[in-house]
Image 1: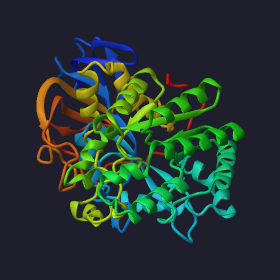
Image 2: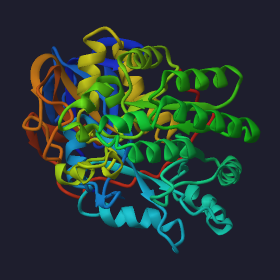
Image 3: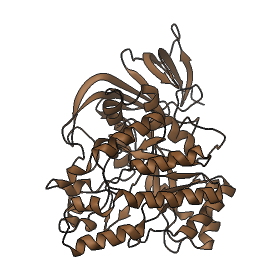
Image 4: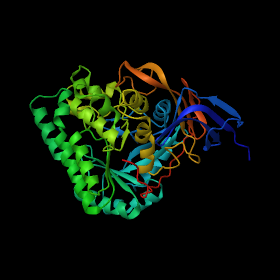
Length: 466
């Protein structure tokens, strides 16, 4: 067997748990071999990291690649999506795969494996999405867990898109997941309220983008989250609420956890960076997403909840659509594909707007973009940490570098940017994936297809500090 090389990253500011200190990291093959003062140790390659922050590769558990939705398909596939992710310091993603009508649920994984083959640049996993919860489909859940996809998603809205799952079916899915070691992820918006409000606004001629926000008020989230908590209490099963956008919903989750329920929630980068006023622009269609952006008061509370652990983590909810597709909603907001491109910007934005501005500590940044996602979604300690034995997924970030975020400076596949000419402090210099340097400055060195399927298993005994 050919001897695997060693790489020594020297003198970087390493973030490991709550410890921030100047240390060296030795990479041997695909793994982190040693960490500490490694002066005098020889390696095949040495990289000087003095003045740079050394982070574990970010883990994004919420992306939509090749996603067919609202008469279009998302622009990010397993090449363009993982390319953008890598430039943004993300070394693992988990993608959603909707149930294929008339086919076994296990085919959702087979479909993504076919899409990723010879394309993915970083490691990837799958969340199967149940949309037609027949008894036969629910009986398949143990096979999905065994196949390394223990996290199942259900939508509580989008009835017209064929995605919505009723409360009684969610209850049965939760019970099955409890027996098999899985976790339910929920898009929590009350469909009846949304449908009624959207219909009323369209009838009244209120069709501009800002009315998308008005048609999906915080109450729609709150009602759905209350239902989720009720189901978690009945079944005593872990339940994860995706893209939390309301402060009241966050408080409901926090209260449920204080009562001993395993109800957890994420928020997304755009809810922390953007507010609903941007939808009042002429091109406001770009920022239509569901749940919608909220006001500054709610945004500030989400930052506070992220800081103190009421919110567990941050994902991108990357759903990249072309401007042409967004224009489907030019005359009616409800025809616009819901979603924003964000897989590349999450880590840079959270460093610049979080750490630099004092909203997040460096250790908390690592928790919300890397360690906690790894723990909750069955990847830890392979991913999400710089401790010896972990995959050598490593990001070197220059904390003083300043740059402008816009379409030209990013690598996402959309022909527009949700963050236009935004000043950023902190720039990613190098990214390693399983010991291989895949991003070096503005160059991508990774070969198509090097990314591997992540066979995940949730360890429920590990309790992240969230």
